[in-house]
Image 1 (cartoon, rainbow, N blue to C red):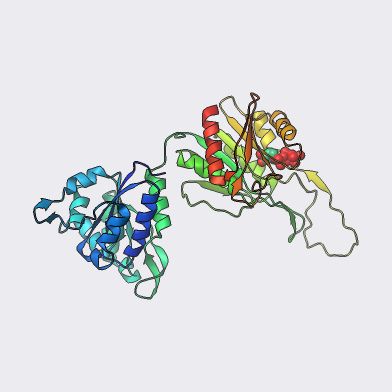
Image 2: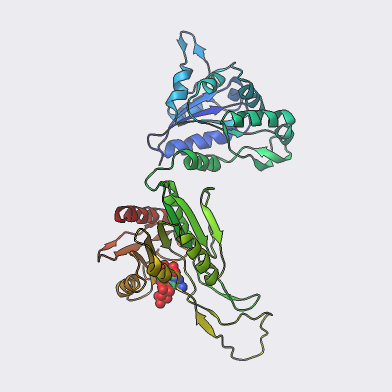
Length: 396
Ligand code: CTP
């Protein structure tokens, strides 16, 4: 994921430095080339030996040693991004004032790459007027901030000022610097999850969909540069990417309305939602009491969102649907492809172990309107999402 990406990490004196050790490991595992520079006081919190071993590069802590001089200018040019995590109050103040009294500051002042900071301090320091002033100055200087969290602080107090977790910093870096460009300028619409059709104020009709597959597809598109909107019904997942817009709906009618609204501006729509085919003709205003021995519900068909998109799509719009089947898979998938007039149907069969609802894996076959069928192996939903996105890229 981060192959050939160059990340320079600055560590300053803060307890939160222990989290940066984990972050370094995550980045290296993802394929990044990581170099680390630390301030003198950071040495009290993390060992350069640990950092050098994990990053596979010598940790830089001095501007010069005996007979050699650290080329700080080249480091700031080498990196795709310079992350300072944790950023202490002291280094924040130095950055705001351009004070160059250690190698980290020398690199910061000569860096030509983007600079991102993840502050860590106690709440009182975090809220101090001087800190706010310094942060405003850094923002004006185009330094990007990773939000602090609320929680237990080094002082033992609970409050704002905790450095973001390694996973959050990792996600921030990916989202802001390392998305690829295959789908730049493309608007993608995804539906995900099940819909809920109310019977009365406490009961409803729904299904086992969790939204996992739809969210995985949305993230795969997003990481390849697309602008992504998810119209999400009842889901059990969220996305960690702030740039993915999630529009929450409940019923099939609401999903229909929202999907049609966003489809107008979309280049590609992938409808993975498990839309309830029927809804109660009327929703009881009060809770239905258990009086009768047999209770019948009268249901009426919901509008077919995918078929509406298939029938109204413009020539430059690409529409993909899913077919979740328990029998006659091939025939049903082909029928859906034709009757709903879509470009592609992705079949997943509930017969296949490890495919369908709730699992983290899926096994799909892709049916194209030109008559081709491709069967894929059982994979994680993230890997399946990548296959789908790659297939769409080659088809549009
Ligand atoms: N779909 C939809 N609107 C509906 C029903 C389904 O947009 N009211 C979409 C689903 O999101 C999926 C595709 O149609 O992309 C197929 O859904 P599926 O439940 O497999 O099939 P149905 O069309 O509902 O037909 P059946 O229940 O008879 O298999």
